[in-house]
Image (tube, rainbow, N blue to C red; front, side, top):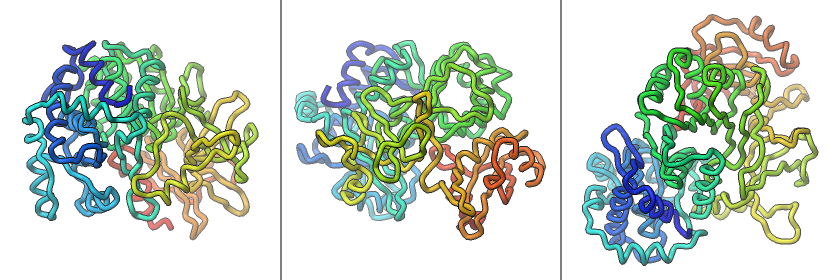
Length: 504
């Protein structure tokens, strides 16, 4: 299996008549998806030089057509670049500069917006109407190596310039295999997609389902602004599996909707992207005790998750959930400040290697060399190790635990404080619908943001937290909000909170 397109070829052969994806407007079988993707690939072959591996930006609304475009680009032998349909033109131009030679696929509305900014693009309707040249497509895909880039996904850079994480075909194929084997998915499974297609969690849905002939229901994005309506949608669509960001899991737990709708078909509930406090998971477990729960840990610099923990035991509301162990064909180690493996219980940086790892950052060898290093623990051969920037430790139970980010570890009066630990404790506060903790270096303030409908005072909040946290870790400011700002991927927008409240 040299190319991700082999997943679709096998699915079309084995499950051709089954529904592959459905969105607001339509549904498509695996056989029809294959034909559509091959048509797009044929159309693209006239615009790119053979073997050039030109990145092709997909500027389309989240839909079946968007998925078909990804696959059509792969059939043409090139990597795809998924971005937000409403991304600002200024950011798109920066991405184009990072990519260098590249193309854009869009629709009529997107083309109009691009032309007003002096940019040209290929129309998706022209590409889907292309005559399919199967001989050319087979020739193009036969030359693809599993180490070639499959997609380039952009994340925010600390310098303000987005970084293009480049993920190879082998990483996607290996991850899809792991997803199906771990959760025992088959052609009867129905994935409820929440993740934006420019967010790494979407790889779980798009290619995990394709690996086993399952169906992906692309849930309307507007529903995630009304979390109380989501359980009813899951019931109506017979969805059996979800991988959602913890913010959505929290919002549904706080909505009380799980007590109003029975979901007997929902058998797998996974979350990835942020730390989830056990208090929210326990709400789900009480409502849906039959389901399998999984805490996944991953990053854009891998094909989504690289560690996982299947939650079989009970956890108290203020207990930290482990991220468990590395996925198959992956390795996770914790390095101390001296590049040595950290002792059990010692906090260090979580580092990742293995088949699912990205190739690095497109056109940024300087950034790649800083984040992707030779494993200092392996002297017999060269092994690439990704420095995640996440802090964690290995417990006496041999499981991995995340403590937070290196940049969220602060010192207050000589005491080292993990802001993630404060968040986990604050999640147990009565009436708290969501929690965020930020640090103001200027005033050495631990600022606790609480999304709640209740009136709370810092003094009474800290009285509750004193039973869990030492005094030096207690918040020094409390800010109550009716609603947290969210990023496009559904996470808490910490940068906006920091900017809005002048935290420097």
